[in-house]
Image (cartoon, rainbow, N blue to C red; front, side, top):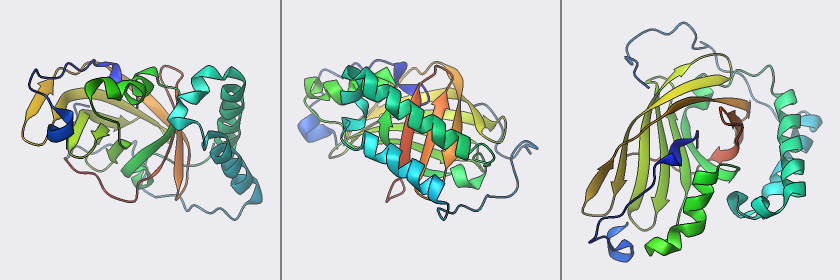
Length: 224
């Protein structure tokens, strides 16, 4: 998410997933670019509901994007559906408090994310929820890959609001954590993403590399 997973994992020699795995701004600094008022979301528009339902139907059986890699025709249809939602959402403010929360990945074109999902079995585990945890008030962003029952890999970032829909971010640290151990990893990189559509249920984003992301609001709040 947000090009976070370019870091390659090297698990410790004593790593046993089946048992062990269970952006530089002062948060107090005022930021005039942060919108002060949340938009009111409504799915009363049949056009919005239809476009959203169409997108969700297209990605529903795509294994978070793995199957789409082998189907360029369907990929084009999904991107067209995203572009349609982006048109409907062009006047939305998506970088205020409405952006905060725990977002769960439904579908993406990001190769790093899909690599982890596809190849987790080589590490003797499986990928659980893939999350983006955003705190607009404190200008913090965590990209998270969970490895049930108790493992997690997450990358911390600082962030700043660049416009009504764009967020800039900079990676600050990365951690691979098991049940009784923690292994720091060097993060690198920075970039931006635009939330081109956001409502009470889902968010659709494009990023600096031209990748796409569809997430929903997770039914729980993830914390470190």
